[in-house]
Length: 451
Image (tube, rainbow, N blue to C red):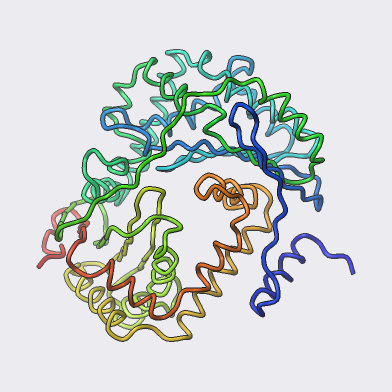
C-alpha cells in the first residue's frame, strides 16, 4: 500500500497516542565558515521546496527611542537589493505560482517562500542578495516610503482599531521602560519619524549578517546539489559583527496595576495579565495547557461559565505567551452590552481560586493534551509556511540550538500532571502582582473593573 506524506503523518499521530511511535523529521545541519547555519530537510512527496530564513533579531534588540527597526526591515527586505530591482522578488516568486511572506516579533524576523522545485536557485539568489547586499540599496526615498507604510499600518492596527491601544498599555505596564518588551514590535510613531538613514543602515549591518541567521531548505531537494547552491550564493557573504546573547528580563510586578481606556467600542472588555515564564522553560507547557483548560472550547472552564451558563460574556481567551526573554499569561473577557467588568473580574478570580484549591479533572487534562498534539502534528503536514516543518526546524535551532526538538516539544506537554496545573496557577496567577485593564465604551466609566 502506498502512503502519501499526509497519510504517513496521520498514522504517526495515531500511533503516538498508543505510545508506539514518535515524530521523526529527518534533517541535516551544518554551518558555513561565515557563520550561517543551514538546515536541509528532504521531502520528495510533492515537487515543492520551501526556503525559510530566520534572523535572530526582533524588537527586543532595539533600544528605547529607536524602536520599530526590525519590523521596518520586514518591509525594506522586499524593496530590492543592490543586484535585485524593486519588485523583482515578488515577480519571480509570484510568477512561479509560489507563495512568500515574512513576519517579525520580539525575538526574531522570518522570511519564507514556497516554490516549485525548479525555482530554488533563483530564490536562493534573491535571499542571499538581500542578506549580503541590501544596505547599499536603502536610499532616503525608500526609507521614507516604507516608513510611511509602517506608520499607516500602525494607525490601522492600533490607533484606529477597536481595542487596538489595549496591548500598548498592557506591555508598558508589564515591563519597565528600559526592558526590551516595553514597546510594540511595530515601534512608535515618534521613533519611526526620528529614524535616520544611518540609524537604519547601522541596525541592518549589526543584525542581518550570516552569523545571526538560520536558513532552512525543505521539500523536493537533492541534498548535495542544494549544498552547492547554498555555498555558491551565501558562502562569500562577509561575517557580521559578533552579537552578544540577550539576557532574560528579571522583573516582578509588586502589586496590582489598574488601567482604564475609553474607546469607540460597543462592548466592554477586561484584560488581566501576569508575568509568567519564558518559552520552553519548565512551567511554560503547563501554563499553555491551563490557558486551554480555561478558554479553548465550549467546555472550557471560563468559556462555559461566562458565555454559556451565566451569559455575561461574549467571548473569552486565556493564553500563555512565552518569549525568549520573559513571558506573560493573559485572560481577556469581552462582556455583553453594559456588563460591568467588576463582575467579570470576580468570576475569573473565583475560577482561578477553584483550580488552585480543587485542581482539574483527568478528562480536562487529557482533552487539552490531545488537542495540543493534534494541532502540532497537523502543522507538520506542511513543508512551508508559518508553523510548518521548515519553520519549526528553524524555531528549535534558533531558540534551543538544535533543530530536531520535535519530540522534546511534544513530550513536555505530555508530562504535565494535574498537580502541575494547580502549581502554576498558584505560582503565577494569584492576585499579588498583575495588570488589569478595563476598556469601556466612551462615556461608560461605570463599567470598569475596580476594587
